Length: 488
Image (tube, rainbow, N blue to C red; front, side, top):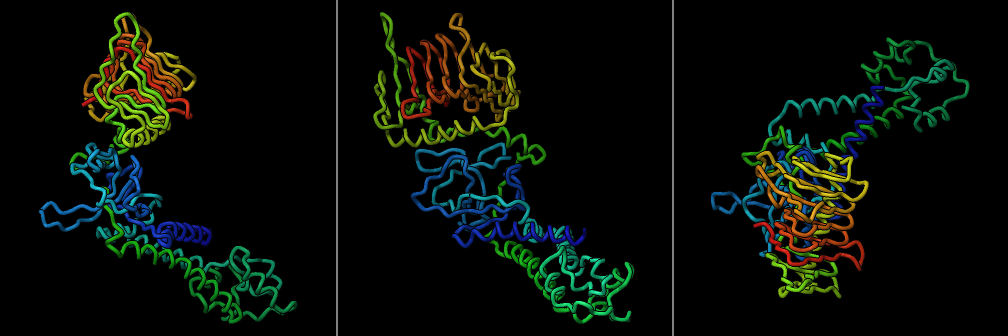
């Protein structure tokens, strides 16, 4: 059992080391994370494998990137690179980054030329020896080295005992571990009727006590004929285990392989899981758009005295042949609108993938709710008067999703309000098909739908309407005499 556990450990060690280092053959490189601001997704001692980025490569929202920083003393000297997540892109070409466990985004905007790689693969734990070495934490490093050495000794010294071979006079030392090829090789070359040698100090041990002593004493208890096979096994396993140890040494030795997941003064590692879980999904380049659709944006001018909708924010469509009617200022299939839709679709996928904290049992939601992901997967969800209470946490996130969403009443009208620190940018209404706001409603947050986002007229929306489309013919927004303004 000791041999089997040791061998399994060495297999895992070499597999993880290989996963961290072999991508280097393709131009990728690994970096050992030194600190904890990317917890719980990336922990200190994990290795993140990064791919290089060409100047023309886009930086996707929510990507984990490695970037260089400079010392705050104005000397321009580079510090240990930082590994953080991209949370927003700006018109001037800069990005906002943040650690998953940090309550605040990074203060300085990130320029494209500072980014040295994008995370592609996470290899857990394998960088811990390097981390211990770099931080001077020698006790766990010593324990790990001792454990690895014992594992190497165990797999090279312990052999399985085959009673049948022993009883028939065959040399037990010819038996390889776990029935390997060494067994077949030694048995096939053994004389078929070799008499058992007399019991001397150099012969094979005959009882359990002698076997223990043989393992401790090593070759002194082995007969000469077993030496070549034993030597091959020792050499093979020693190289196997030392390869993993050497790989870890390589990761620890070079300062260029280390990255900080930078902390802030307000980071709490004890609550990092909750903080990271509620980290606001990013709108990215879609943040500047009040109305964004794949195919069509329409302002319906109906009634005897039609009044055009008032929209504060950009209006755009993102596909060839799309239309915008009723609005004078447009981004009709412009590059900005296409880029914004790319990030909107990434947001839509993220919202749908979030694990529900509350699965609604009935097709209606009203009253006061606290931060979380509210899901009604069975069908259409009706929204009554709602109060979203962040309980003083400005980073609290609210996600409400269903196949379709609709407010409940036109008269006197449904009201959705945000209290106790709830931010407009952290409220998301997500519908697979249609998001519909009835007439005269007062609502807040980002409304994003797979097919259609529409109002029945006269609504007041502090937020956005986005229709990403699930085919080339869907992704429409319809408004009428509405007042819509993105949060500032």
